[in-house]
Length: 314
Ligand code: NAP
Image (tube, protein in one colour):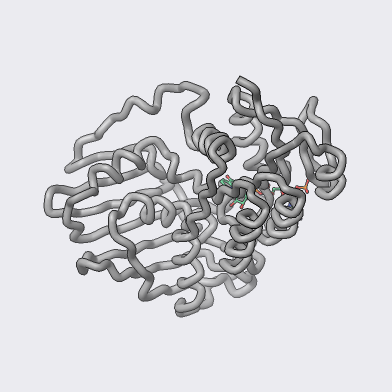
């Protein structure tokens, strides 16, 4: 099988931790270039400017963007204008309108665009989705609590407008919820806690309306010491499902449901699955631009009651 040439843009934490190893482990892809103002990948041609890359390397068909959300649109639109397929880290943009614009540009250019949601690829999310089909949901509770100092050391952009604050991890939980629930829901209430010296929230609590009246809530917090919690609990008329560890572990009525997809195979795991899906989209001329998780985040900012809390410093 021929591999497809891909360029990685924004060589920072997630590019190094996940994108580079996933691309290198896959027969679908050849990492042909990078674009980053400071970062490089050993042995790979490095550019510091997007337009120079697009001009110089017309053999590269696919651009994968690992930048923070605010600068991403300019890079994505240049790539689409140059007729390249585009893969977007989550969230797919800084605003919903940007994302709609990118989707329309891709359609016009006849290329694939993929708004990735890595948490949807966590090992037990598919099994949770299957189990919830045809069951009556009574309640759903999301608890996503982690220590920002541990997971985002020194990342100032997360505190600037468009950086999402606690919704940077919270949108991962929402990406799972919108994947596993058979029915669409909408946000009805939000309380957002903003450190008084920062432009994005450090904590949020949300409530949602469910079409059959299930009680739905989410609590996100970046001030968690000790155990980190990434849990979704769904109570149904036929038992209680708990997805924990960000979707890696599933239990039903307290019993762990093990799957065979946590087998250490380097082509499995969240990011390898995203790259396999991108390869399929490019092969089939498809597009996957589901904005449901981001709609809930935008609604939380639209409807949220803002509370000032103590300043945050690293
Ligand atoms: P990061 O390391 O802070 O940033 C990635 C790279 O983007 C930086 O190294 C920088 O490279 C470039 N960049 C930053 N600001 C820029 C700007 N204003 N203009 C142009 N380039 C800029 O961030 P990250 O943690 O990798 O996160 C990037 C995206 O991945 C986010 O959307 C995040 O939600 C998502 N993500 C992160 C994680 C995680 O664990 N960190 C997990 C899953 C998804 P240069 O300075 O070299 O240009």
